[in-house]
Amino acid sequence: MKQRSLGRCGIMIGEVGLGCEGLLGKSVAMDEIKTGFEDQLARLGTDYLDIGTIHYVDAMDDWQMVLDAGILDYARKLKKQGIIRAIGLSSHNPKVALKAVESGDIDVLLFSINPCYDLQPAGEDVEQLWNREKYKDKLVNMDPDRARLYESCARLGVGITVMKAFGGGDLLKAGQSLAGVALTVDQCIAYALDRPGVACVFAGAHSIEEIQASLDYANSTPAQRDYAEALASFPRINWKGHCMYCGHCAPCPAGINVAEVTRLLNLALAQDNLPETVREHYAALPHKAGECLKCGECEKRCPFEVRARKNMAKAKEIFGN
Image (tube, rainbow, N blue to C red; front, side, top):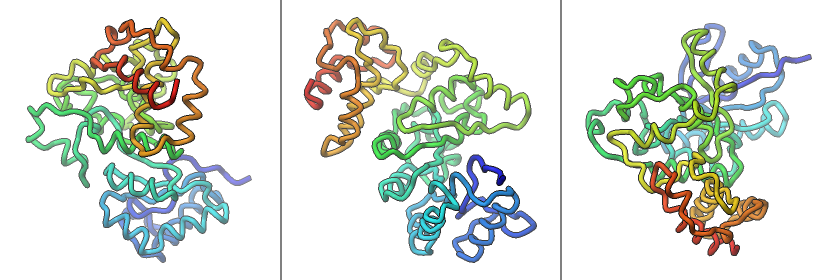
């Protein structure tokens, strides 16, 4: 029986091992890409991969090269043959990632997600942006391009696999974090998993101990995973009015899942027309926004001062109940 492959293996425009030496490089030459991909299959002892990933697509020119060089066509062919089961793409740039996702060809997106990256403007080098002195004392808020990307992936059924959940470890150290506050491993993983469209987190590690710290998330308590108050305390960041889907608004006296209604509302507002999938998910909720008592209990508990009652009224207007 052939071995099943896991993770971020596949067709690559970057981070690709070519030939027996296993050298890393970036290439759009189809002969090199095909050789590299076939070498991966041989090394893994498999005749197919679950996800074939086109890597390192961080600029619009990169995405255009994927189209012009025939890389996407090659991925489509492999998928049709069953050699890969899904087409993936990795990027650090939300605008580029959104362009690829909206093409309809991408099934899985490998994207860098953590609270501080979500506050950065779009760029081709997220690590460079992270370290820029100009952001040191600047009050910033959620990057709308990233929010739009996550919501689009959720709407289109593109699963996001997360890289850089810990920001290369910087987010775990107050002295190195852009926020000036350290988060825990559990909080970082929980934050990433709560973003719309996210399916899983690829946790990087330098040691067995760091791997175990990530595995311990499976047995962590809700209190250990709770990142809301930590984010609200970030000294240079203003999250006011932005729903983080953290669930602090619960319980609702009317039984409404306020966070989920807000998530579906944001998905709906991102489109000119209400997507049928969003309408169906809303219809399946046991309690709708129209049942809101306007008591304001959810708003009293929200660390981010989200106007939940206004959101419930808007959701009733859009969804009809």
